[in-house]
Image (cartoon, rainbow, N blue to C red):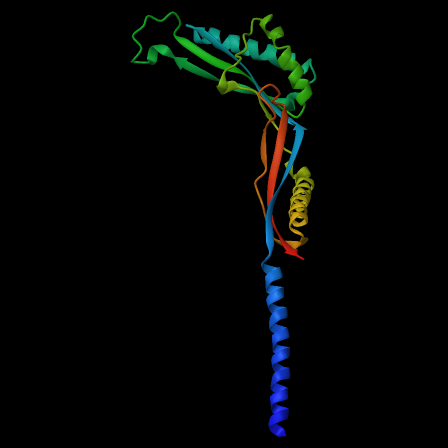
Length: 232
C-alpha cells in the first residue's frame, strides 16, 4: 500500500515538474524572440550663426602707405556694416597678414611689388538674414575701392546651427517611434506582438548643408537602433 502511494506521489511530482519546465522553456523562448530595427529622424533648420570674412588683399612697396590703406579700408568696411544693421559685437578687425616677397631666397623673379598683405573684418553674428543681405550687396564695397576676396576657401563664409540641444529630445522620440513602427510591421507580418525595448543605442547627430546652393539651411539627422521583444 505504501509503495503504491509513493509511486503515485512520484508520478504527480513528475507532472508538476514537467509543467514547470514547460512553462520555463516557453518563457525563455519568448524572451529569446526579439527584432532589431532602426529609426531615422530628420529635420531642416535655418542656420542661427554666420561667419563672414570680409577680406581684401593689397600689394605695394611702401609699408607705411600700405598700412594707411588698410586703416582706411577697414574703416570703410566697418561703416558699411554698421549702417546696415550690425553692431560692434558682430565683427572683429583682422590682423594684417604680410608677405615680404624680397625675403624669399627661392624667388629669383623681378618683383613689381615687394609686399603683399591681407586684412579685413571678420563678421561673426547671429543676425544671419541681415548678413546674407550684406553678402549679396558686397559689390557696394567695390565702389569704395575695396576688392573683397571671393571664392577663396581660406576665407569662405560659414553657416552654423548651434541650438541642437533644443531639438534633440524631440528627434530622439521621433526616431524611437519610427523604430517601433518598423517593429510592429515586422511583428504583424510574423503573427507576433511587439513588447518592451530590450536594448537601445543612439547614433550621433549629424548636421550638414541641405545642398551646395543653400548652405544657410541645415539638414539634421539621427538614427536610433533598438531591440524589441516579441510575443505570440
